[in-house]
Image 1 (cartoon, rainbow, N blue to C red):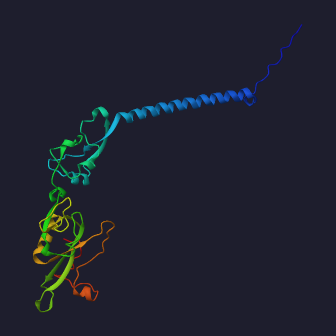
Image 2 (image 1 turned 90 degrees about the vertical axis):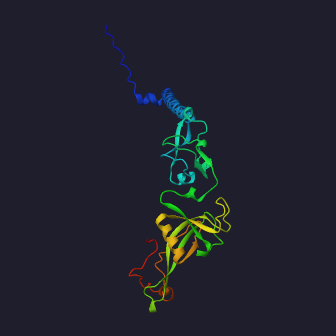
Image 3 (image 1 turned 135 degrees about the vertical axis):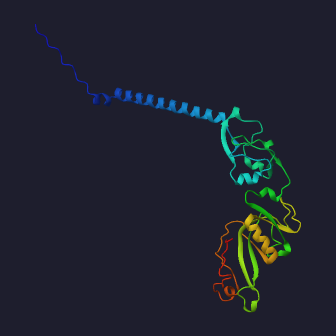
Length: 270
């Protein structure tokens, strides 16, 4: 007797997934995948947190700091550099905030890459020299050689320096020809005789300005052979106008000044 096998029923995946059991299975798989991803994320987060807990910020020297260097000048020059190191490498007394060094000077040499210690800097009585570096110089000007704002000046103010002279050339009858020019812009007042006690102390009746060495010589010449005017600048947002050599013609008639020695100096020229 011949028997026939019943044909196997073809299971369609789409129909199987559309059933309730299929939906539950898919949901379970998705949940497992999400759980696995969450575990991976949590492990990575724990590792990063563990690394953060094991390291700290510290201030290191970007280049050689020589004994006697001013912390204020070093900060302006970007010599202090933040670094992140392991906690077990942090030295006792290491500086984490360079602002606490304000007004101090280096007590000894600090080499590049070294952690800066609180003992590396010492507090001193503020002096003008602590604001100087490179080509900058401090020049003292007697107040009787200066016009304008001497009673208003304070240490830390910024001024423009004008020089007024009598030029013998180009004037009728050989008389002096008065001229005035802008010699310097945005000059730091290191000390002032009136009201300038503050951190800088009294300057003994003189005004002390910070200037590049070549400009300091010009200021000294103007103080001895002409008149100096100091224009007090705004504390913030100051702007400059292009101002050429000023003469009687330019003031009275608004014309370009007559050249002295064949040239018309413009502010900022040596």
